[in-house]
Length: 185
Image (cartoon, rainbow, N blue to C red; front, side, top):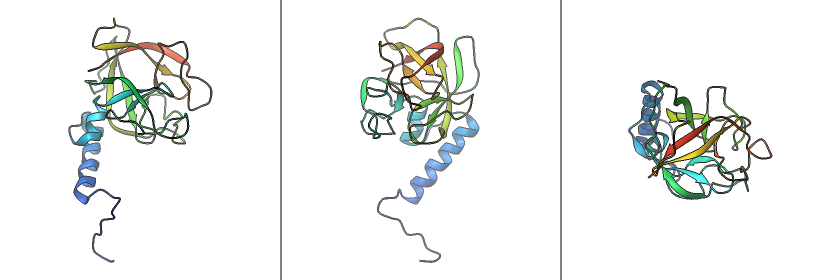
């Protein structure tokens, strides 16, 4: 049909699509997001630990989302639901910026060095606001330590277990840098 809008059964409505697009654009420009479920997840609501690959992924508390390197399907959530991660670029001695949400694999990844390797293929694709994460501070009852940067895939993974999960580059994650302490509900 020429000149008319026809919604496919599997596509979001035009308003929802425009709302998401404008929300993502606002987050990229302003550093924070306040629209829709995806926007909330990007700022910290709905981040989960994947029990298969050990990465931090945006899951809104459900399984089968994103792309996990184990089995090639979605992540499997376990444990805490992480939240209240501030956004922005103002770093301090204990806050690091450039942490983003990948729209391909749904992992949290560090974008400063480039796109890294995504389990969804090629490099990570940043969507939404940049998160500012605490590191090298004491663990508390509402903040878990031992979250690490993998220098191979650039993802945030949990390094508190003897095994280190599975990396998109093959093998296990390799920790480098800070010990992040992430808030949870």
